[in-house]
Each structure stands twice: as structure tokens, then as C-alpha cells.
Length: 249
Ligand SMILES: Nc1ncnc2c1ncn2[C@@H]1O[C@H](COP(=O)(O)OP(=O)(O)OP(=O)(O)O)[C@@H](O)[C@H]1O
Ligand SMILES: [Mg+2]
Image (cartoon, rainbow, N blue to C red; front, side, top):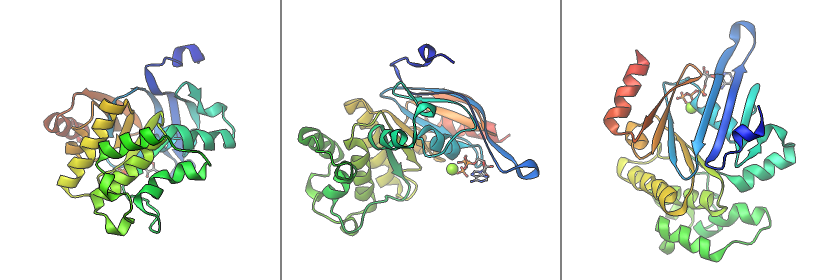
């Protein structure tokens, strides 16, 4: 594959021919069987599919948290397979943000210090104007001196989203980011994720089981048995539910 075909700037993440299997011989599972994907910049993309279809494997590989057996992953024009371990660590720290189901905040640090942690660990200064923009968009201005246990679940997840956005990464990955939230708080976090694509140009890729969560995305990618089997543009709860039902047949 030439870099010319993949270095298109309208894509935040591109992958071609991704294969990954676990185990050997009779226990072998082909979790990814030749996945090609191109994720447009400043868009909110959801990945859906039955349990075991390879969603988390795909996300972890795209985010450089796990390696593929074959294929290429390009993030912001950089081919991950050409990076050594140190370069990959820097790439993950600076170009990739994460929001997990468990909020993963440091309990002894207040909200502001949690948000700034990745930059303080990297010994970098933060951009005060950008910090203000992120905090205002996420409605966290009044909560910055609170520790995680003094915040609601939704507020904690907003702190995790702010932490992911602060480095202005090429892409933010979420694995069931609203899985631990009630539906109203989940809706709030999803609206903010969507606002970050609209207002900050952020690219978001989210794995979810929930058709309501997926309906906040611009595009839904459908996986089955380690392959990408479909795409839904402008998804609605009804169109997503229908597509999932037909995958289960
Ligand atoms: N570390 C591992 N060792 C062995 N098999 C694995 C491992 N991780 C995943 N698998 C297998 O690879 C396949 C894809 O798993 P993956 O976790 O990507 O699915 P998923 O779509 O995220 O499922 P879920 O919706 O249940 O989270 C499954 O068959 C799973 O059992
Ligand atoms: Mg999973």
C-alpha cells in the first residue's frame, strides 16, 4: 500500500486489511478478518455489532493499544506500524484520547488536576484559552475544585471527556462511555460528545451496544464475525435497531 492512497487529510483514521486472531489451532479465534475503514475528521462515528463481533478488538488496535497480525493503521497521516515503542507511546499520549465506561479518574485529585494530568505527566504547559473553551462547553466551570467522589457519575464522565479533549487529539475513542450512566445523564454526555465534533472539530469513535447512544453519531459502522458488514448514515434509534436485528438473523 502506498502512503499516497492513505494520506488523505479528510480522514482522521484509516485502516486497510486489518487481521487479528487470538489463540492457536482449535482455540483460534479470528477477531478481525480483513477490516478496511476510513473515518472522516470532525465526525462522530459509532461501532456496533453483536457480542464477540470484534468491536473492542478493532477499537484497541486502531488506538494503538493492541497490535494487528496484518494490515495498516494510519492516524493523522502516520502509519502506526512504522513507529517504535517510544513513538507509539507519544502518539497515544498526544494524538489519541480515551473515554472508558469506568471513568478512570484519580480519586485524590480534583477535577481540574484530573483534566490536566496527561499534560502534567508529559511535562507540558496547557493552553488556558483552550482549557476554558473545553470547560465551558462541558459545563464544568463550577466543579473544578471537586474531587471525583464529590461529583455525580455524569459529572465524572464529563471530567474524563474534558481530559480526553484537552490535548486536542486527532481522535477520541470511547468504549461504552455511557454504559455506567442513567439515561438522562448518558444523553447529556452524548450531546457533549456530539458538540465537541460540531464546535471543536473533534473526531470521535465510540463502541456501543445502545441504539439510543448510536443515534447521536453521524455514522454507524456495523460489525459481524470480525468484518465490517455495513454503514448507516444519519442513524436513528429505529434504523439502528432494525440493522442490529437483521445482523442477528
Ligand atoms: N484476549 C483474548 N484472548 C482470546 N480471545 C479473545 C481475546 N479478546 C477477544 N477475544 C475473542 O475475539 C472475538 C472478538 O472479541 P471482542 O472483544 O473484540 O468483541 P466485542 O464485539 O467487543 O464483544 P462485546 O460486545 O461482547 O464487548 C471474540 O470471539 C472474543 O472471544
Ligand atoms: Mg467489547
